[in-house]
Length: 141
Image 1 (tube, rainbow, N blue to C red):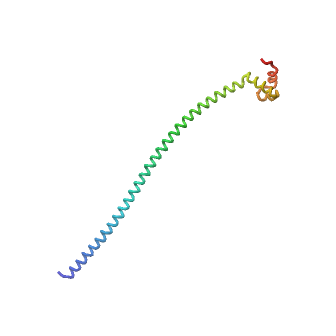
Image 2: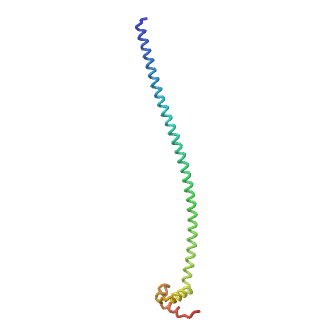
Image 3: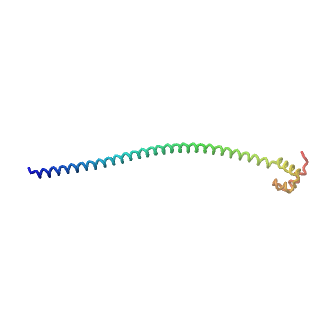
């Protein structure tokens, strides 16, 4: 065999080996970059899962707090309704008391003793001046 041909074959095989080494190094570096990217994505995924877990816990707390507030509001509404009913009852009692003849008579007599005129007493009690004068003219019982 010709030494020149074996030289070319040797050179070509050496070049092929060098090319394969360069390609192997290139693929190795790409593989390292891919591994770093996958590792980074995994870390981000872990952070994302932790944030999701924290958000879920916060949502549960908010829902629990909201439910507690709703219960408190319902209880307060019931108390307010009870108080409103009680206040209406007391107001009706007060109105009935102020409309009673004894109360009107007492109001007119005490106002007259303080120096109020019959006209002023009639205006404050909603009675006519004649009615106020009639009450003032009645003897004490």
